[in-house]
Each structure stands twice: as structure tokens, then as C-alpha cells.
Amino acid sequence: MAQRGRGAARKASKKPAKEPAAARAPDMDSLGFQAMDSNVPGLSHVILQKLNMKSYEDYNDFSIRTYFDMFQKMEDTFKFCAECKKLPDALPDPKSLRRCKRCQNVYYCSVACQRANWPVHKKFCKKLKLVALDRLVEWLIFTGDIPFPTEAWTKPAGDVTGWEDWFSMQGQLEEKLDAVLAGRYMSLLWANAGKPRPEEGELRESVRRLVTDFHSRPLTIGLGLRLFGIDPLAKPLTIHVVGASHVETLNTRVTDYDELARMFPGQQGMEVVMVGVDVVDGPIMRPPLATPGPPGRIYLSSYKGLYHDFWEDQVETKLAARPDLVVGFHPGFHACHDLMAGWLPTLLLLRDYCLPTLFTVYSEQELKSSLQILVELETCVTGYAANPFASLRPEQVYSSPNKAPVYCSSHYITLLGPATSLRELEGDSDDD
Image (cartoon, rainbow, N blue to C red; front, side, top):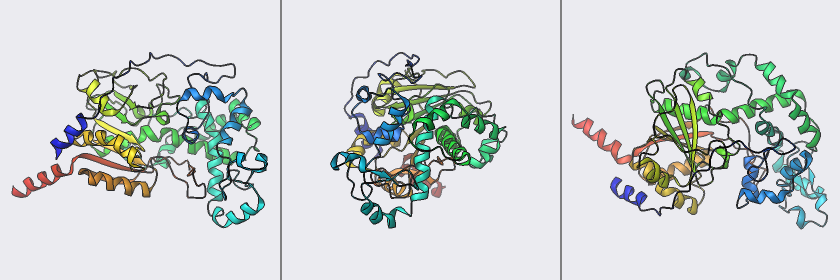
């Protein structure tokens, strides 16, 4: 089975690799945003997905000229009647859509639709208020106000069991939160968002949630290292982020995963390589390292293409290092046949090369569906559980807002090799 799977992975159509673009600083426009021809400033990654544009170049037509325009464009993507599902263009008066005053998130085209929808909406209204708030405050990640500077870990990684422990290690936390709330961009946000500024306590909690959203990915990588018993202090490590897209790479800075260095003080150096067909051009668009990076540092690089192509082009030719750990944030291969077909060569490669792998999912339902597929592929699932470093930021289920919100990396699955290998080892042990 393992040999047949490996052959399937290698027989996948091989596309010529593109030359990686040279790393360069992003251009800045007159408003201090990154230039529209190469970046999408201030727009939530979830909004990017919802807009469903073919490429980032399509944003040249957005004609964003002011902060107010930007926030209106963001909000426009959420304007549809939650009851009858009509979009503004399908209504006699597109301006007739009105927000729920309680949550400031869900829209209705008429009083009748709002009344009809209330029995369902009331179950989620309070939580959706947080969704709408965090969607706006997320802009401060793009401006650099979030995250605030973090501190060296005063506890061993194994003793930090979740966000409460992590926040307890942040010195002068309240002062750091105050600085974000008093910042220029927070003022600009509420002067242009078209909504009243929330109370300071609400904003403070929103910033905390978005800080967890930002650091969830590096800390989940750290969790994966611990789960597999991989010691960053013993040798330099290479981590591949498979299926990376604009979610992981839009506006990513070379310092964005430095929390890993604070998580493992004295670590010998780590390279995190973003691999995916939708990797966004930016500072980390630089070739992976063939030799270990500088000790004590976290080095980010990327490759635009499919993972099995990257393996053949870079790893097998020793242009890039073999990974100590592979991580996939929300691969989504459970969602439809086309996604599964695209992921199949990669899943077989990960299985047959016995690469320690961690996947994250949004919900328990997604967890169950993903586990079923992995078991059918005869992959050895070594564990799955709720992620202690899941994002605390709730996200709307966009096709139907009146559902329980989901959370990035809410659960994880760990994999290692073919399932048959584990059974064979257990059989050998029994014979002894």
C-alpha cells in the first residue's frame, strides 16, 4: 500500500516551478497603505475569500481612495438579507437593507424579514456582535498596532497550557492594551467605520482576541513540535506550512513567527517555509534554505506551487531541507471532491514519507469529516484534540450568519506514516 501511494504521489502532473520574486519592501501609497497593485490593505482574509476574485490584481478596480471607502467596501461584502438571502441589487431600493441594531452584523431587507428571522438570530446575536467588532479591529494588524510587543517566556513551553498562561507572561499588559486603544489608527478606524465607537472594555477584549488570532499559528507549530517530541534545542529545525495561501502570507512580515523563539529560548534556529499555490508576494517570498539558518532565529521563506511539486523540485534535489514537521492550517480537503483531488498527492506523500504532520480545523464537524478521509487513506492518526492555542476570535459562517461562529485552528489532528506501519510494529512487539 505504501509503495502504491508513493507512486501515485510522484505521478501527479509536474508543473514548471516559477522563479521566486526577489524580496522587497512593499510600496506605500499616500494614505500609508501598501500599494494596491501588489497588496490588499486592511481587508480581512475571510473577506478576500468571500469576494471570490480570481486574482489580487482584480482589486485594482476597487477604487479605494479614503479610509471611509475602504471600510464601506469591507462592509459591502456582508450586505445581504439574512432571511430571504437577497443581495442589494435584487431589491427595489438597495439602501433598504438595515443592520440589526444589537449585533451590527446581520442585515435585513424589511421589518417582516427581521421578525421572521428573529427566533433563529436571537441565539447568535450576542456572539455575532463580537464577530462584527473583531472584523473591523483586525485592520490594526495590517497597520502594525497589533500585536503588541511580547515578552520572553518565563515558563517552560510544557507549562503554558493555554492563552491564560500566555497572557500572564506579558509584562505591563494593560499599558500595552491602552497604547493600542489610544493609537492613531484606532481613532481613524472609528471615525470612518460608519458605526459608533464601542466602549473601551469591548475594544480591549477585541484586541486581546485578535492578539490570540495573530499568534495562534506560531504557537500551534510549537505545540506540534512538543506533541511529536521534536526538540528545538537539539538541532536546527525546518517546518513546512503546506497549503499556505493569502491567509498565512498576505502582509506577512519576516518577524511574524518570532514568538516561536520566545517559546523555545535557546533554540538552534528554525525555518518556516510557506508552500502553496496562493502564496502572496511579499517580504517572505524568498527561496527556502538548503542549510540550517542562523541559530536562535526564526527564518521565513516561501514557495509558490503545489507541495508535491515543491518536494520534487526543492527537497529531492537538496535545494531545500527535508522537514522535521509539516503543518497545514485548515487544509479543507473534506469540503468537496475537487479539493480532495488536489490534496491527494500531498496527503499520500506525507503518509508514505512518514513526515510528522499536524492539521488544524475550524470545528468538531470538520474534525470528524477530516478524520474519516484520513482513515480511509490508511494514514496513521496519532492524535486529535481541542487546540489550547486556538484563536479566540469568533468568525461568522459566511453563507449563513445565523450559525454558531467558528474559530481558527480550534482542533488539531496529528499524523505519522501509514496506518499499516503502526500495526506491523505492534505485531513485532507482540512476537518479542
